[in-house]
Length: 414
Ligand SMILES: [Cu+2]
Image (spheres, rainbow, N blue to C red):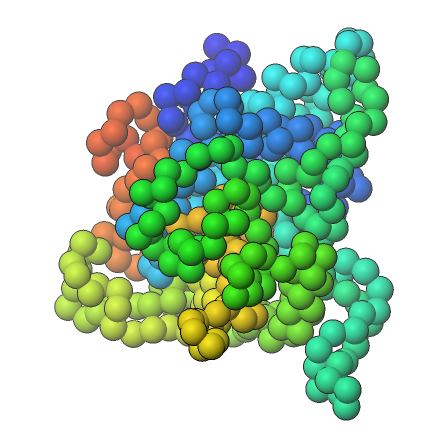
């Protein structure tokens, strides 16, 4: 069977196959590199993401954006556990595969054969882009720091990639390949009306977001919600996020280099999670299994930092009559149950996956370079199916995805 219809059938059956059968192993690129090196692929990616955010798209984007968190607060995601990075492999793989199928369909809409072929080829190159936090995005920048007036500066700017911060984006559209300005689907996701019923917001673990009615209309990054519970102006939020990204970049980069290169992190079970198993517990279903030792400075910790930075860490102080938010906190990325609704979630997790894959490349063949416990290695990565059905046997297991290339992607710098 032609591999593209086969992939479509698999996707409709909820099966994660990855893109290896279609176009082999190809690199995921930093988003700015993708814009430069694969402009037609990026063009299709934007159109596909936009399409996915529409209410009539099937399967509804809610289904997979909601996988990592739910109203109980934790969803399926393996928060804090050694299997945390490997659980995200089929998660990102599923999104990558749905985007790919959408891109192939879109490519058929151009008028000339030449353009249809060009965009089809561009779709075959597609792998989900990532956001490398340590890639400079511009020249010298000022940001809050330690110099007299409370500011400092650095030779390069480590702001958010511009593709995430512009509200409008220009793309070439079918059928005539004309430049068209459209709302940027990487900037935020506009929820359809009543997309989350009132009862699901109230009492959900989205805590502060419960009270912030604006959070029900669209996603936000780093908003400073004041007493009136309205978000700060868009420009202000973007500026503050860029400042905090620059301020914390050196510490964060140091941490990433430490866990990639330091001997203290030569053990997957210390590098990957931000907690370690309690002595005597053998099954992940035992209560308290992961709660005894809190490993620090792990990949999971770094990952948490960026969720907090992008959404804004919730800090409150007592106002005249009530607690008010200061310093961000009203953004979707900082809440487990809503993080995946912000489109930047996928590029953030792309970077987390890149760091995990680089760590594995550095430690290949070493003694503790993978999950130690058989329970973890055999763990079914619900809800990601490898074959039809809903039983544990039909799910991907952690061991099957030890090598990221299994799903048809690698990184440009591995
Ligand atoms: Cu995450």
